[in-house]
Image 1 (cartoon, rainbow, N blue to C red):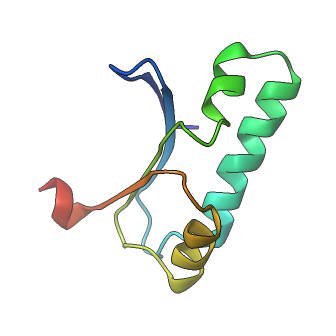
Image 2: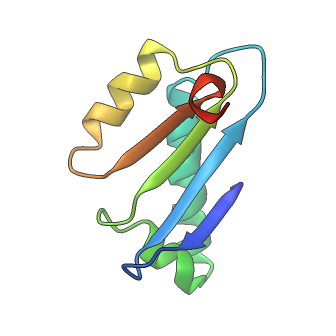
Length: 90
């Protein structure tokens, strides 16, 4: 969990930043969701909000995103998922 932020609309956004030579894959996305579930079970109120489908995820990957990442992202349905590569940031 690299990013946790309350947004102006009061939703909770969380995300992950990967500065690696390999693309972020489905495991990055799924691990993020599992981390939120674990934190929710431990009683973290912000995690309960962040796991809600109305709360966006943010992923930054220096090497971009693999096909498996995009597949899992699509399966997430209505959740807003923001993805940035280095080209997007610089």
